[in-house]
Structures are given as structure tokens and as C-alpha cells.
Image (tube, rainbow over all chains, first blue to last red; front, side):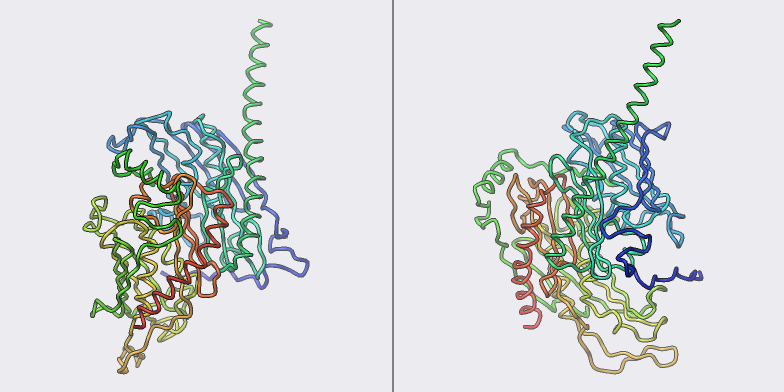
Length: 258
Length: 272
């Protein structure tokens, strides 16, 4: 198999004005679009675009555990699959789950476990399917943000939603929400997930090189960004229920007239 | 698909004992909250490997073996050798391990050890090249868990580093289409010495180096890998609960000192 020519490495990740390749400031998130309830068959669903990331999440459950032996007598089992579509990256990805996807499925599940009230649904499973349709760096975090929304959309009781965002280091400077190229040519990446009201960090990974003070500063930036994302998640849900309420009111009025 | 793990049944009374002790600043094996179990490191036990090390961390035992072979580089890094880290949770090590394809715990273990070595640039990948784009040395780090009594990440990370330091590779060169032995040996070129330090949160207390009994009752786990300069090169949170931001900051600071102590042990054992 011949290798396609690599996309060219950008000469500079930060320009003279302190702006990044896509024109963002160092502490700026990429444009984000959130949607909920867009799949018909799933019990809950959500869609996120963050930069060029396009990720679809579906939730099924609580439903009967299958196979039966995986059921737990005192709580629901959460199952999670993070999966990248073959066409989601520059070079076609083999659709079979890679070791990376298996690790990410685990850490994403662990980031959401603390907020779901699993003890209300013993002997069942809650299944989360995260499909990355297009990947652009930070897909595990965007996946968590969308998965929280899908869980809420499915009406699964939870303490609150989890929001996630990564901070990285490019050309020696800390930068929020790295894109694909910044992650690839940058010096560090720290994905963080936060349960904002509980003040709980439920995902924390890091690779690259950071001094202790860089970590402190970057970690704080990521936590702040998670809070911003959390507000956006709440807005989307509110909008959904406002639409449902409006529709219900219209129906009621129509009935009164009739 | 990743599913909530079924923990082996542990008597509620035993769980309570472990949790109550930690809450009082004590531990079931009489350590302090911030101390490791006794660490023993032996190197060179496997003659057929290029390097090997066995780490006893309390009752946990992990063996790491290094094999250096000839292969082709990845197309996007023609001027670098290849590093492959794999971990086997061997069924003889625990009643909860089963034969078969690697579990997600095994995959996570190998990837966390891999990240420490790769991201700290411990191995000088450029010097593994024999013929650019064609022939390179491939360094296999195989981690074999022999007895699981908790904190496999730290035991595996120490074993991997000690085995790398212990490695000897025959001098090779490419002549025509063949790789030939020049005679003599050299050490693997290492530029950094990453050490993983793992914390567990039991109830609301952070302890270092959790034993199996403590892992069975912990809320969450955090691994911080520190390089030789005291900087961070990898992190991984695990477990069904989380940490407060202050707990994370405290753990990161504590990791630096613990990593330096363990690194000194590894270097003394690997060179001795």
C-alpha cells in the first residue's frame, strides 16, 4: 500500500500577533455546535461539532442486560464504545477497534460513571455509543460532552452533566482546545473532564512535557473551559424542553378551541 | 465495548476495616499514607532477552523483558526506530485474570507505561536507525505480571525502565541487503528515566501505592509519570469516581519526590 503525501506541517503554530493557525487566541475554544435528540431509535442522542470534529452519540437503556451474566445485582452496568469511522481521519482507519479506542472507551466510561445514578436500575445496562464521524483533535473530550447530553436526553437520572476539554502546549505556550495539527506538532496535551457543581475531575490524562507550574496553569484553564461548556450543554437541553413545552401548549390551545 | 467491571466479592467488614484505617491516617499493612511498600529490583534474570528486570512491589511481582529485533520503520517516521510496549496479565498472577485476548486493563497498563517512555523521549529513537526508511531496530518491551497484589502500573513502569537500562544489544550494521553483526555490544541509548507514581483515593484520603485490598475499595486512581528533571510526562486517571482539583494538584507535587526516590532505587539496581 502506497502512502499518501502527508499534509504539510505548518511553519508556525502561533503567528506574530499571538494567534493560532485557525485564527484563535490561546485561551479560545473552537466554534461549538450541540444538538440533542436527533436519532429516532435511540433512547437518547446528541451530536457535537467542535472545530472539524463531528461526533454522534446514542444511548440505549436502561435495558435488560445481555448477555445476562454481565448484570450486577445492585446497580446498572454502564457500557461504552468510542469508535472512529474509517473516513474520519486523513489515512483510512481500519474499522476494527484499536488499542487506543479500547483505552478511550474505558476512560470515557469512567468519566461518566460518577454522575449516573446507576443504583436506581439494578440488573440492567446503559449502553453508550460514541461514533467519531470526523476527527480533529480533542475527540475524547467532545465525545464526553456529547455523551452527557445524550444521557440527559435519554432521561437517565444523573447528578449533573460532565463537560470535558483539553489544554495543550504549542511552541512553549499553553493553549486551550487543541486542533489536530496543534496536537500533532505540539508538545503536550491534557484532556480533562469536570463535574462542575460537585467539583470533581473525572477524566485526567496527559502526554508530552510539562513543568509543574505549566501543569497548574493549564489545568486551571481546562477547568474553566469545562464550566463554559457545561453552560452550553444546559442551554441546549433547556431549548429542547422549551420546544416541547411550546408544542404541548399549542396542542392544548387547539383542543380548547375545538 | 468497555463495561463497568465486576469486582471480586470482598466482605463488607474487610472493606470497612481498610477504609476506616485510611481515614485514621493508617493502613492495613501498617504503612503511612504516603509510603510505598518495600521495593526489590533484580535485573538480568532472563539471559535470552537483551535486558530484563523483575520488580517486587510488596507482594506484587512484575517481570519485564526487552527484545531488540530488526524491522522496518513506520512510513511517517523513516528516521526513527520502533518502540512497542505490551503487557500481559498472565492467568497465574490472579484469580481475576483469564487467558485470551488482552483485557482493557492490560491495554491500559501497557499504554500508560508506553506513554511514560515515549513522551519523556527516554529511548533515543534516532540512534536505532540502521538504514534510513528501510532498516531499524525495533525495541519490544514486554511486561509480564506474575503476581497481582495491587499497583501494577508503578511496578510495571519500574520494571520496564530497569530492563531498558539493563539492556545490551549487539552492534549491527547494514551491508548490501543484510544486517550483519559487528561484534561486541552496546547499551540501549537512553536520554531520560521516567517513573510512574500512582495514588488512590480511599474515602476522602489520598494514599500512594495502593495494595490490592485498597484498590478494591478505592474511589479513583491517578498515575503521574515524572521525568528525570522533575517534569510531568504522562498522567492517567482511572476508577469509578473522581478527584477534586486540589487533590490532583497535591498528588502531582507529591509525585515528584516519590519518583526521584524510586528512580534512585532503579538506577542502583540496574547498574549494580
